[in-house]
Length: 263
Ligand SMILES: Cc1cc2nc3c(=O)[nH]c(=O)nc-3n(C[C@H](O)[C@H](O)[C@H](O)COP(=O)(O)O)c2cc1C
Image 1 (cartoon, helix red, strand yellow):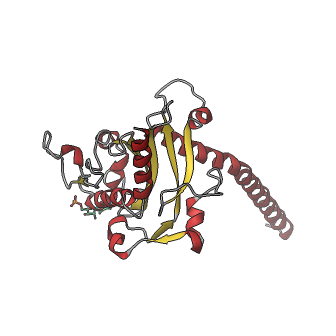
Image 2: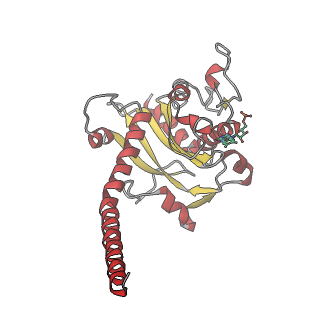
């Protein structure tokens, strides 16, 4: 091949590379807002699904349905609504990066929930009845499985003791093992489980194995994931942590008191 021909081939190949990379990066940049919008929609869908408010079929206006939920940012420590914080822009992952709004998980709880820290504030979602009472509360929770931090929405019924749904929406556990947290059969056991006793003390455990049908404790227990005890323990510890004093305990107590005042 002559030098001139080699030069032309190199020029065309380089030009092609430049054109392709410009096209790919333009597409990636151009699609980013759409991807972010879809991620927000997916979160809304998961929250509504946990609350049992997502129609199983047919068309619906996602934003209109979501607007039926009251979204607030709360101070975990007090359970009070955080003043001056816009729930629309609040991101707990960003808040966790700022020293003033980072909470370090106490050493004694670390082994259970597996995460070292989280934000001092979290977003909560409440569906109220026409008379203003709590119908459902949806709480974002997260904790370590075997391979990953697992993120879920835990929805409680109006009694604030009974589980409405547990929906995992992000994790990287092994499909077929820890990834079975997504299995509809495993998920179907959650509605009706009771996390707290009548005095509002936490009393719940995910077993290694299956719950004995008809046993007196059946509502206070859930089936573990077979071959995935580490993920199971992570889910167990995550729920216990977030229902406790460092998690949503104070907020749930506030809602109970509001409910008692309403009569
Ligand atoms: C490739 C591979 C992936 C695994 N993924 C998980 C997992 O996602 N969650 C989990 O708890 N255990 C997983 N395990 C199994 C754990 O290492 C451990 O054996 C298991 O959690 C013990 O549970 P068992 O007592 O129910 O068998 C995995 C094992 C292997 C070899």
